Image 1 (spheres, rainbow, N blue to C red):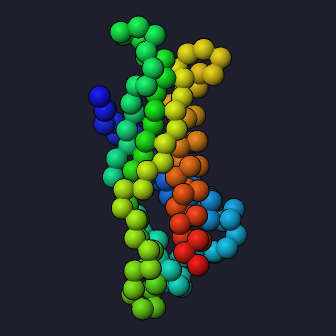
Image 2: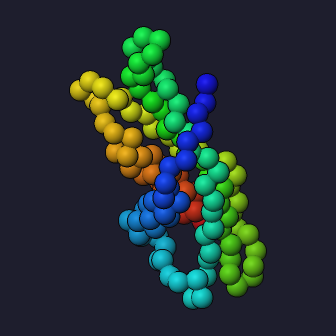
Length: 127
């Protein structure tokens, strides 16, 4: 069973994570839209939290988080789309009890790192 969950401000967190990863990578610079050679646009399609492991029929021990995005990379000079990704998925899992337990918010940090790495790799590896 899949549970669709809205995570408040996830769009902002995705944007920040991708910007930070691009800066960390160092192959591209972040500029304002008027002076940029490339324009990266995207949308969050879905955020899913799915139970993975149960202690019994009622208590959930582990969840899997998935985030699904679409994005395009466009050359602003020629208006040509250089890269288009549909349904790019990042995921992580976390335990809600025990020694490895963490909060959903902490797990989201790892999820966003995975997503930002995937997006940045696709952009940079394009060249």
